[in-house]
Length: 396
Image (cartoon, rainbow, N blue to C red; front, side, top):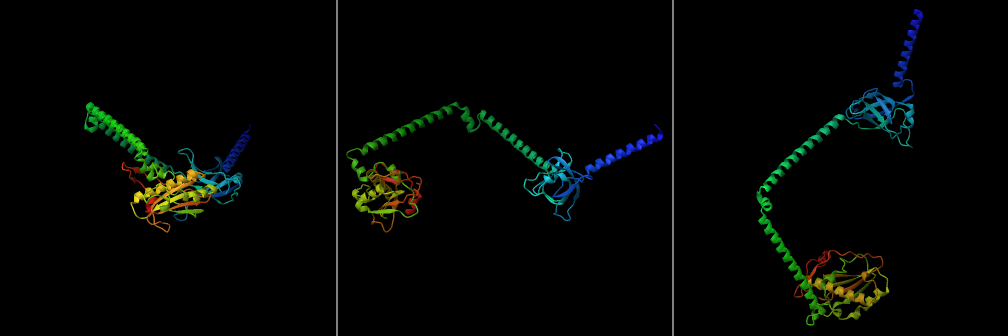
């Protein structure tokens, strides 16, 4: 081949390589592709440089054209990006731009998320929402703080372990109260004997209580003492609050039956009913009509002992309920009691108090009872409430 031919071939190859390089660089710079511009604003671009890659869904789809500093403090840095026109279909108004890092110490690039279906497409020159970049220096500072805290925790744990070892050594050597308890067998033996003695004493006390209860049950049926229980009107004081409610519900009763206490009971301090026929009208109404629930409400006058009167009203309400349940056919769960203790009002019968049966319509809600008052009976037969509900205190 002649010298001229070789020179021509060299020039041709050189121009071809130059053209290829121009096209390659132009392709990366998006000089020969249809593009559009988008913007994003950040407080800190975290080392992002012009010409950095822009990825959409992890795919190289553009480049950072320029980074513009704000004109005044407080404004944000604006990143201008050239994007391939093919991304116009997946970048929407709700897409978010963020600055990411390739690996731990790699270069920064801009990542743009896909938009939601149904959102409007972005227009050329619009500004996307942005997420703050992860600054490695801040991350290192937080990591350093965590490591410092962990080291302090390890030091404290080491110190606590040393203290425990010291305490254990003293106990093993018999120092201090705990050490003497652990090492002195005689002291342990005495403590075991004392515990056994206390256990025997508790068993004896429990046996005594059981015997007392059996004796009281026998007294109820004793010929000479049965009159006391009959006069009182009830035997077991725990029955007084079995069907009690805490307070009357709001609303107007469907029907009200009012009775004179002195005509219904034998004495001022008795819960023994003497005139049962006077309750027939109330019992017939309960048996023949639909109702939600009913309440036997009993109170006394202002004379006498407050605690004894509270127990007396609960006992009277209970015996009235028992009579109505036993002699008239209706659901006994619908009849409740409420002993009010001392009360004043228009329905009061001097120091005897008042008795009412309040009947509420269907659909009425039965109020719940508060913690039951505990009633104890002494050997002499005097009953004293240990605890009374808040409703009863308010009525006093």
